[in-house]
Amino acid sequence: KTLQVTATIPVVGHHVTTGHGSVWATSLNKGTLSRIDPESNQIVATIRVGESPTYVAAGDKAVWVLNSHDGTVSRIDPSSNKVVAIIRIGPGTSTAKTLLGLYPARYFGFALGAGAVWVTDYNRGYVVRIDPESNQVTKYIPVGTEPWHVAASQRAVWVETKTSLVKIDPQ
Image 1 (cartoon, helix red, strand yellow):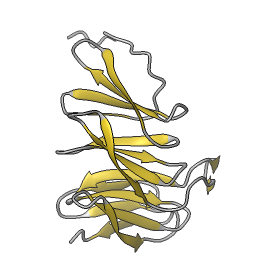
Image 2: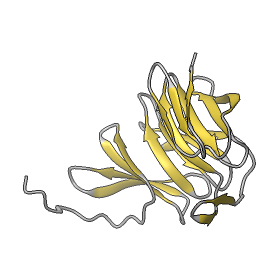
Image 3: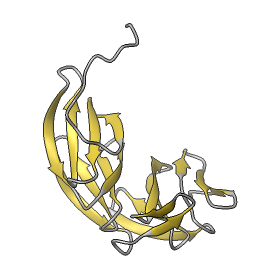
């Protein structure tokens, strides 16, 4: 335990998370999700997801990937490494005008918690709620101008917008 790099895995990733005994990394340009064994540091599965997978999160029963350019979320079964559901959350390819200039996506924030999957829609000013049991969008919640990041606990969903921090009652 020397605080030194101990492995380099050849994945050109965008976002990474852990869960189900693995490391999961999205590849923005390839439209894939890589599953990595943390003991061998080897890629054990490459899963085709949607266009421009930007975020990944691991929950109790599934791994979820936000595909920013095609307006979908992919649900992956970690026992089979297969996409078992594709949930449309809104329009596809779009460009968001942000403080950093034009960003080639509109869906930025992504979180699991409070019994749902949560995604921010920067252009429309919404947070999208996905029910993980039905794999359906159950609500589009208006939160104000340019929602960016989202975090969820059992008691609240927090959304950072251009002008404020918004608290949502998830029930």
